[in-house]
Length: 347
Image (cartoon, rainbow, N blue to C red):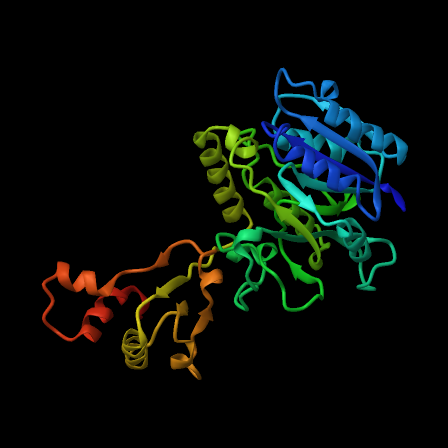
């Protein structure tokens, strides 16, 4: 089955000999094939048509009647994906990174959510995204994550397995998504060609246009996280410049980022009991907690995470209380030491 109303857009840099062939092969092996492919080779001096591997895959495209254009450029992925948004001959565009490998039914499942007759049976869907999973860090979505812009610095909901297969409504999408061109506005003009945060800018604009965004947990893409190429080909300064533009975007749209502390309590049962006693004495800010003894905190207003979940969060408080006591020549009870170590949690 081929859907002539979908164009795939891939912008690749520095990965033509690593992950790009995997991504391309997975696209031409979908149970629902896209009608067109626009492949941007964003690297001077590279000609993939002379490579026998790409010659074979392009021959497969022709045999399956997938139209394709290979565009050689050095403009960066923001300009490349905007080129597809502007000039694609289809109503829908599937944006994919060059280090991602969709499962064979990924496009079919995304289409079920966004197509003209979709499973949601409601208003026009602006964009839908699959889960984007790292096989080495598989874990279930924490209940606290909701996909809002206020949680933009928290782990993305697409990075986790979901307990429900029901599409989840969000305010922005990450990395790969299928969108309706008529609902979109141009990609942002960013300082760097790396395109840092460009997916968030772009999909949140669709949300602001009044269209719904969804993550479909039944659609899966495996993220192979190429350690070279892609966004890593550009300088830190370019990414930092884009970060500053993003902060301005948040201010302009009156979006206030939420911050939450995440505590990794890696000690024994005694440590967990001490920490519980401290919580009972204090009015605490909302925080996340990972511990070997979650049963100690049963019935308490504490957001518990497992080890896999907590590793996805940044700014995690993980202090060795015993070493802290040695460094401070501490002579009082350990519970008092722990109270000081985690004092930023208390209001």
